[in-house]
Length: 307
Image (cartoon, rainbow, N blue to C red; front, side):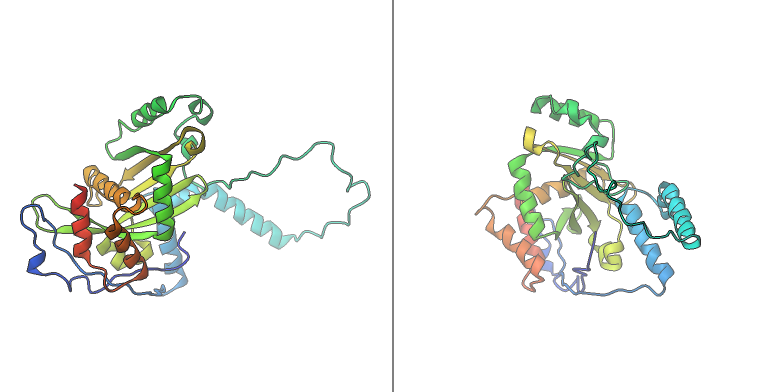
């Protein structure tokens, strides 16, 4: 998913100042962010692959590398058997085609799908709903069923976005796939900063991962997100809806209400209309460009306005 490393942060405490301790409506203590390109390399091949396995496990919602191995056990075994067979008994090249073999087949082959399938272990909308039946329902009933589908899970998030709103968000996300958002803490004068990453693993799917900035600064792309949001686009053209669902990992320092706040902030920064909230657009641009004039206190001020 990550072809290159983008943004690792340093000097995070340079901008801390008493002036940033807000009274009354202002609650955030802010920190500076700087952007460097790093090329972290593992000490050995074993360590390098271990990190990638951990990352793959996190992306697929698994708790450990052992669970990932269990999920891919059959595939790994088949690949090993195939590799062993090919190595021991190399197959001869196929014979040249005969006149009869190039004759058109009486059974037409099915046309290739125009959309690629999702990665292994990745859940599409069909994992949650019967799509053919869902397409026959009115939008209001689809929304009711979707919310009911997630009502009994205490660590899940769900929402329904109108297509125009999602398209604005997607357009901005492709330009600015990385950003940071502040999270206020009740009873504290400070705010935690969280790092978000967009990805588009399948044509009908978009995902957002939220990670503590402190952990991302320490581990980079191999940090484990505390919240993962998935947006399903299968109903966008016919029903004008995008179904969103998310999962908050327990024990990662963020509860469901705090995750909802981050999702709300994301929508306000990424879902702006043309010409609306110029200051938010400039913050996105400065962050993506690694501009040293990016100020976290300005980010906090804009997040305050969302309340």
